[in-house]
Every structure is written in C-alpha cells, then in structure tokens.
Amino acid sequence: MIYLKSCVSVIPGLEKGIKYGELVPTNTILEQMRILDDDKFDTDFVANRLGIKSVARSSFTLDLMKKSREDSRRNKKQYSLCHENDSLKEMLVAAMNLAFPDVEEKNKVIAHIHITGTAMVNHGHFLGEARKAAGIAEGRYIPTQFLIKGCSGIYDAFLISEGMISRPRKPVNILVTSDSNLTPFIGQATKRHARADNINEWLYPVIFAEGIGCAVLSNESGKIFPSMRLDYNKVDIVTEDNRVRAETIDNEVFCYIDAKGVSATYQKGMDLNIGRAIEYAGSFSNIDAMLLHESNPMLLEAVIKNHNIPKDLVPMFSDRIGTLGPVSAFQLLEEAFKRCTTSKKKIVLNVIGELFSGVNSGCIGFST
Image (cartoon, rainbow, N blue to C red; front, side, top):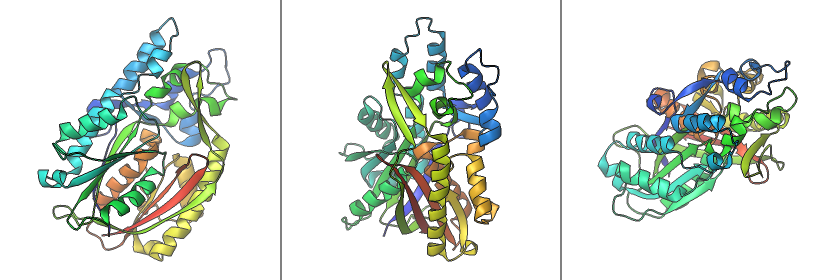
C-alpha cells in the first residue's frame, strides 16, 4: 500500500512564491520576441487563442533574460549554459519544509526521486544542498534518482516508489520533487524571431512556466495530516511520435512544439484518461476532484465540455501561470489536499506527457 502524505508547489508570483519571482503577461513576452518588421503579428495571440494570460517566471530567470537582451555582443551561450537556477533552489527548500510537518517525518526519508525536463549543471549537488538546508535525513546517505520526464513524470515516480516502499517493514518516506526551469532556453526566449507563421519555433518559452513541486510518499498513512491512498495507476501510449523536441543551435538550446500535434494528442490522451477515471470511480458523482493536466485553458475547457464533466470538479491554474510541465501534477494534487482530504469520495489525477520517443497518458486514482 502506498500513501500520499503531503504535496505542495511553490510557483513564482503566487502566494508561497511571491518573493521568488512574478507573473509576466504573455503579450509582454511576445512584444519582446516579435520580429520588428512583422506588422501582422498579434502579441495577444497566446492570451486570446490559448487562454494563457501570464506565466510564472523566477527572479533568477528574469534577471538572466534582462542581461541577455542587453548584451550587444549577442553572446547568448554564456546565459543559456547557466542552468543552476538560484531562485528554484530557494523555492525547493521552502517546498521541502512545507511538505514535512515535523522532524520525525524528515528522518524517515530513505530515497529521493526528482522529476525534471531540463537537467541542470550539478543537479545532484543542487538537490543535496536543498535537502541539507531543509534538514532532511541529515548525516545519512539518500539514494537519488533523476527522471528526465515532462508532464507525466509523476506517474513513473509512483511506480518506482511502490517498489521501494514494498520492502521495508518499518514506516518510511520517499521524497519526490520536481522542477520546471527555463534557464536553458534563455537564447530562444530573448531572440527576436516570433512571426505569425512560425509558432512552433517560439511557443515553448512563451507558455511554459517555472516552479517547484514536493510530495511525500509512504507505506503508512499520515498521523498529522490526512493522507490519500493510491488505489489505481494505469497508463496508455497515445502516440510514438514526439510533439516536443529540443535542438542545440550555435550552442543555444531551442525547444520546438508541434502546436497542432499537441492539441490532437492532448484530446486523444484525455479521452483515454476520462474512460480510465470512470472505470476506477464509476461516475463523476463519486469523484471529488478531477485533476486534469493543463496544456492550456482552451484545451482543458474543451475536454470538460466534451465529456460533460462538472466544472467544479476541475481546478484550473494555467490561465494565470502558464504550463508547468512536470510540476503541474504537484500543484493539482496540492489543490486536492485542500479540497478533499475530509471526503470519502475519489480523487483522480490524469497526466499526459512526453516519453523519449512518444507521448503517454496516465490515470492515477486516490481515496482518502
């Protein structure tokens, strides 16, 4: 048996992350990225067509972007290679402290799983220093696994944790964390290359947000906070073609999004996920929260409408903060804890994201 004891997110510009960054309007970002001689380019495109009005940016990334724009030599390499985001490290320590109610719980940690789509320079040191600052398992060796995954990474983390938790006879905790970091894409984000006809080339650094997630998995139910028990965990392959790919051009990392492909894949994956959710819970009336991964608000609203899902079951954040990648699931589960830990109904988390050579779609079911 595996329990989710706690789950928190720290997002720049929101309440817990207000001091670590800010929410930047997407039309401001596009105004800074558009080609100056393209009179047809609509800087409100992302806000009006996708529903993302602003995105969360860390202070570290905003400062790096400012320096990159002001560099008259256009030497972007020095900025794109600066991956260790100091703001995210501070946010990770804050998230760890919020996720653990007391020192005893921190001392039960036997392993750490970290989910990221952009491995940083010295990432292992980054995590070790954050654990040390948060006082987690001090003086003990903590095996650490990195999952280089996107939005569906938490699915893999649950599978790996189940294997770890099945062995010990005593109560133990698995620390699961995640980051969404844009510093590798500074060159792409500060280049004036956005036109009306090349959305796939500039969309990624406009809609993706930064943030940190932290969860505690265990083989025992929480004593201080109510826990959510994992009851159901299934995954499907949606497509074997990647919809997001990264390339290095002149020492800069560019991430390309197949915008039309993402839309079709999201709808297909969510159709599978909704079917899994009903298989698990029986009906929407038995569910307290439908946690649906947010590629963007317009796609999410279409899924809600097509499947007649009661809107009050579905939390939505991406209109204000953008797409959080692997951190999205942590923010959604945090919302589920706020809403549902006193209820006896089901909680469903539906995730969809990139594999190394395709896209998978997973449905995870909890009871309280």
